Length: 307
Image 1 (cartoon, helix red, strand yellow):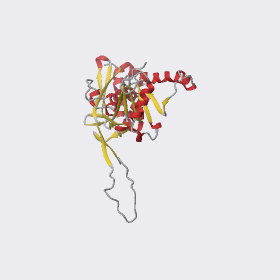
Image 2 (cartoon, helix red, strand yellow):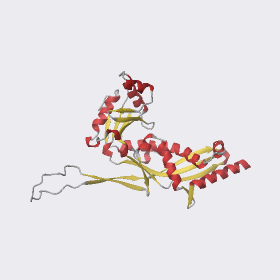
Image 3 (cartoon, one colour):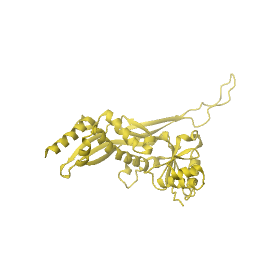
Image 4 (tube, rainbow, N blue to C red):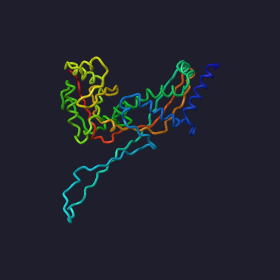
């Protein structure tokens, strides 16, 4: 092993020591670096960035909610006790049950040599790994299905699977994007639609593009902007955002605050040197899960085909 390679390995080890703390022979990402890692993961993707992240202190976390299902006010008469029992709130719980995921990021020596001379190499290392992990986590949280034949997607049920409301192209015109949007909106229990600005249509790219074409055909200033500029779109006051992990022909209507995911705090990152291949594999493991605050405030549409 030549001097340059010794120096390379020393720098890798030095960066890892700056990133991690030793625990029973493992390398747990240091607390301040965990926060940076999760921040980079969130910023890498649209839905993760908008969702509420819970830093789980154990492998499970309960999302508790409580509310009244019906009227609680009644008529009152002086000196007369109301008949019947008082109204009782209805509690319910959604539970995050973390599943373990692993990422093996192979970084060649040439890539490391190009970066280690820069200050803050440990930050560069985290960015390289977290960027791809963010995309993969969002794919799991959207498309996860325990019955899937894909081993990764079968780890947990994702937001599409857990949504309580679903419409298909038997409910709307599969060739008309606004027909799908309207049907989804009608499927939302109206008590949740107090503030439409909190809601988003997350759609496959083809659906967002089709909606731009609809606006263009109207010959308005907004239509011109939708065709020539990267403006944000909305339908009836609700944001429309494309997402690369959303399946073709599929959309999710949900308030952003309703999307929840958890990451267990012990994020491990360890190097596996592949000297003959002139690369180092960085093995990252973390435990994650996703759910809703209230799955009733979410609608999935499937089967849009376009014109």
